Length: 118
Image (tube, rainbow, N blue to C red; front, side):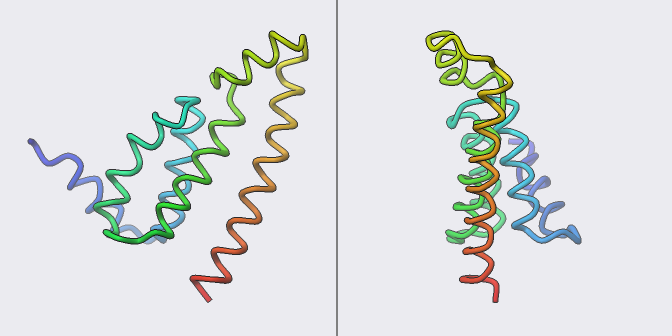
């Protein structure tokens, strides 16, 4: 009602940073903060929808970076259940998830940059 979302999108669109960088950072941060898919999607997707309507690349960036953030946080419930069930160490498990998340980000970013930005 007060137009906060429109103002946020306006600031992001007038920023010197590319839209992809803004969406990636927001998704990763909110993925880490919430630890669940519904959290970062509910926060970032309305921003993406207003920043660039119909831009499927930004949607993909939001999904991949949010998932990476979700997988490297101790607030992610699946990691906590896995650690408890298999009696593993939390930070060792998160480290392994972090390596795979970094690999996912690198492959997705390289492919997306090569496919859509070159």
